Length: 383
Image (cartoon, rainbow, N blue to C red):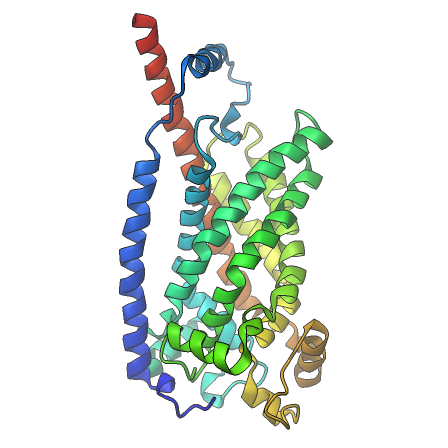
């Protein structure tokens, strides 16, 4: 792969990214319509109405100090509804912060092109837009949207279910940090399995002078030249990074919620602040692994050639240990923290957006279902 390919041309890159944005816009409206349709109440028979009567009667007797069951998933809503809420949260998280993610990928390059050496995030964005076009930081957006939807649907649905189940087992009636961390780890396994191919395509599209004309061209080229295993080459590293990241992330978030929102009410400011701080702490702690993951995903061929590793056509960075050795040889200890500023700046608003959107949908679904059940209960009393 060489820089002479058409993917390096700013005009082609801009047109490709613009098409990706228009494609994503159409898909997003379709998802929004699905969410509206999913809010239709799912009311069962007499047995469910009796349970609703009990819930509503109990809520009428709540005092100010009582803890509402907002954290519990609505009993009448299907799992698919909550997966859909998680999918929207994930898509918004990744897409809103995508330009900063592009900068992070480039700043983690071990031996960047002189034209791609940036002082900070703002300097990088300004120079990328000026030299390569306004759409260039958005290349690979549609691949991220396609991967983030199902990945985050599995992520949040699994976390919510396991958190409740494990908390009731480990510490009945109270929050358990161990349950939160364990649920986050299991949710990460499913999330990364769905997201890893999209991450590979996204990061190769984001690199300076990326040789790919578009997402499909990238998928086809990687498949033909490196085989299907290339899409999961960094999976073990991704898990090695994301399991501690998500465990620390969820435990920090739940701990901050206990301090800032002890009654676990719907409180947007506490969700945003807890999410942002949890994301920042987890991101900074796992940056060395993220640098290795980026190297495994992008396979910086010019870096390998300059370091004397790519003597043959088939020499590649093949695993976490190999990636660690390469990073240390080329960048020393500082190399493991390349792009840490961009990573933290990316993760803070990303996790704040993700938790805020998810908690908003969870609250909205709970309230919407409760109101509809209450109407059904009133109707049944009058009959």
